Image (cartoon, rainbow, N blue to C red; front, side, top):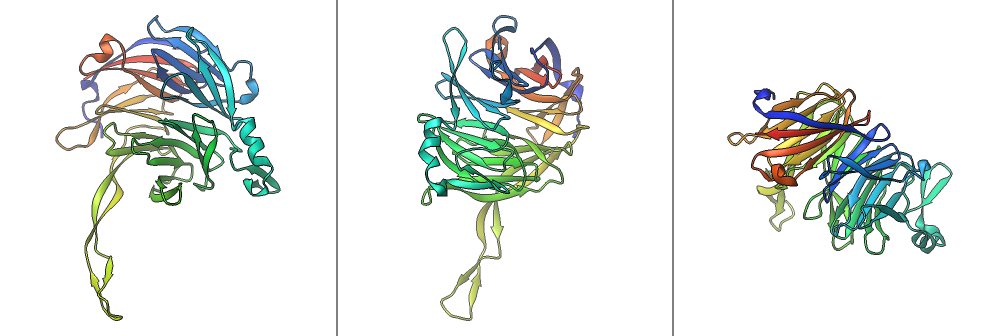
Length: 371
């Protein structure tokens, strides 16, 4: 819903480009902006007028597009997801340089598993891979404490131990089509979004020691490209190729169909039971193209689209719903990634947010948003 989109003060304060076009991912860590474009990861210093201080992975063009970036909880390592089916681990040096440490799965992990026939799974006709391997583009990474979650166009997601770099678990055929996005809540609940139109919810079964599917929500008519969790953890946003953003919340519902036996063979008692379910509470319309990225911060939601714009949505105190407060225009190509910068004096001011948007033409724009 659009409501006074110009009432939200916003302006572009800077614009700069990566060395190569087609930005796929933006992340910020320790006052550094990481921008993945094609196979290259560009590093810009936010405290020195967005000066490029490093670029890495340039010696490995065969790795293909870099699809996602994540950091270890101690901030010493960076993890990158690649089109060549691998996850790479880099050490961040004190001089802000990046040195390759390993690729996942590691050679040690491969050797540990390759001698046992049951460790192989069928991936295509007449083709098998180890269960610890992705066999298609790794499309997303999320780090949650000592674990990392990777999703892939091979329809699976995997869980890695960040101390040993071992693959702990693989959920094969998690979706019917390529998995495009993953987010993990603070309590460890995993949400995956796929080109099959579904968003799925996974939780770890402590007895079985593996993740199981607990809910399937959505079933959009188009592929789901992006996910974002509300900062308070109460809601989930999903965006797809149909240009709409869905907001989901966990609700306490009544289940009148539950039957409880009375102890006889011919009688049962109908009882209402409180059950939790994830339900669609709102659909945000306004974009004229596919939703390619989502970013939630505070009470704001930013969405980037193939229509070359970024929309800023704000939660209203009365209704609890979101309305469009600003449309950020200026990109000449689809907006592929968004990230928020929380540092600096202005970033710490009440109601002020610095937003970075990256386009597939290599253009990065910096926006100052003021409520």
